[in-house]
Each structure stands twice: as structure tokens, then as C-alpha cells.
Image 1: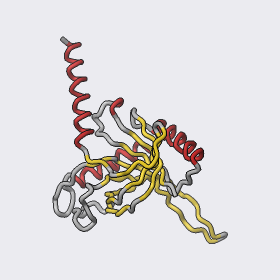
Image 2 (image 1 turned 90 degrees about the vertical axis):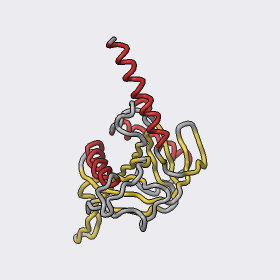
Image 3 (image 1 turned 180 degrees about the horizontal axis):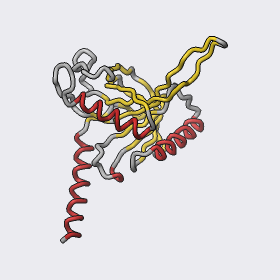
Length: 205
């Protein structure tokens, strides 16, 4: 009985994860080139709800996710809900200061910008304004990205491994980075690890 219950629960877990993946709107892009797990993509313009947090990769992501989820769940000035979309993106946000002797710029701390992509029909004018001053809405122009896709747990080790692989592939392709690497997660936390879609994206010139 216990074994059959475990099997039933595991099956339900898988089905829920699959349904959740199919139901979520994703960022719109066109594949320009594909090479096994690597791609070059052209992304359409879109709006992000973004917040900046401090801490390690995983801890900062969890804190920011909760903050952004409250915003789309109604913690905004119009009390309206916003549909959940994918991916949840996370990238380094470097804080720089100017020095006077000599004049230079120096990194003083590493922070993470975490964002939810807003539904494709959304604009800065139509989206509800966040109540939390730590959340901003930002228009992102069309851009070209190099990407690598992988499954598995959300971990800094997995992110760094695939980031390194993507950077090596970009060098072989003669692609020049135009910004920081972005860690993209497409699934809810309850999705089984082997059904999760994760990506590392790097803007290219």
C-alpha cells in the first residue's frame, strides 16, 4: 500500500509539473542558430518587473522571487493580479563607485537583479504600479542572446558549469558578449528536478 501511494504521488507530481510548464506564457524569441544544447536567439521587446537583492546566488534568488510574486499576486496600487510568466531571470548587478586619487571605478559589492517577465500584451502604462519601492518596471528592447539549456536542481554549481560551457561555445563561434550572464528558470519550485528547464543566457553584439 505504501509503495503504491508513493508511486501515485510521484505520478501526480510529474503531471502537475508538466501542466504547469505548458500553461505558463514564455518570452518570445526566434532561434537564429542551434548547435545541440546551444542556441543564438533574437528576443522581442518586453517588460520586466525587477528587484535587486544582496547575498549568494541561491539565497538572493529566493528572497527576490517572494518579493516579485507578492507583486503579481496583488501587492500593487490597483490590487490587480498579473499572470505568471517564464522565465524568472537573475543576473549580477554591479555597484560601482568613483575614486578621486586616481579617478577609477571599483566594484564594492555584488548584487543580483532578479526579474519576472510580464505578459507580452503588457506595457509600462497598463501594468499596475508596485507598492514595494524595491520593485521597478523596466522596458527591455529587442536583443540577441546566446543560450544553453539544461535540466536539474537550481544550484550555483549548475549555473557556473553551464555558464562556462556557454562562454567557451561563444568563443568558438566568434561571438562577443554584450552584457552579464543571466540565469533563467522556467518552472515552479514544486516541479521535479528532472522536468525543470534551466538556461544561461548571455547578450551578444
